[in-house]
Image (cartoon, rainbow, N blue to C red; front, side, top):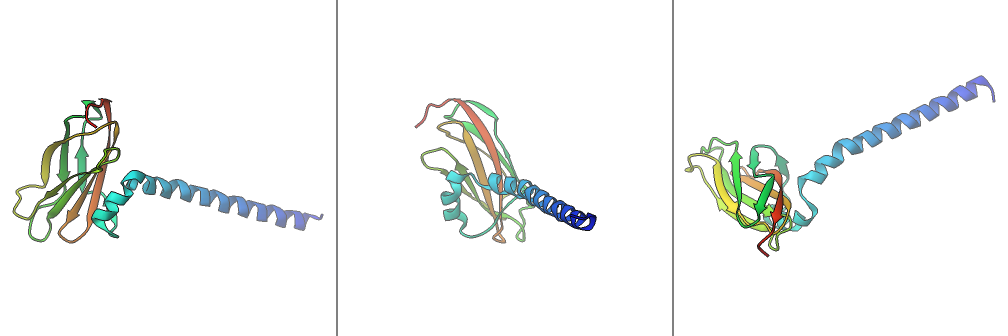
Amino acid sequence: MDFTQMNTTFNNYRRRCLVNFISSMAIFVFVPQIARAVPLKLLAPVKNTVGSNVIKEGRVKLNMPRLAETGDTVPVHIVIDSPMTNDDHVEKVYIFAEKNNVPHVLTISMGARNVSAELFTRIRLITSQKVLVVVKMNNDTFWSSMAEVEVTRADCG
């Protein structure tokens, strides 16, 4: 094997390594986005609610305690980035709990007449799980936020 063949073989090897490296980096960039979008157990209930529409992250802030002593009444505070005008307002707020017997916990209707896009409520959680909030805007866009709550003592079933 002469020097030119060895150099060509080495360059081909470097190219393959570079392509493999870039491909593996793409997996690390895109898979976490897909994985955290919707938990697997919530895919069917969320799809029944939003259909084939795309759910984007942002515009919704879900505040829940990281640790709840009991799952009977876990506080939920949702803030949506919307001026609540006729042109830009929230139509529906959906709350899903990953491991509850009925994952679709709550649907709240809103409109342009609401003063602010903020709400407080309490929900029941049967165990530690992820809670997903999906918001439908008046222009048929969907936005989401997720929180994970650890329930130390589950009392409801």
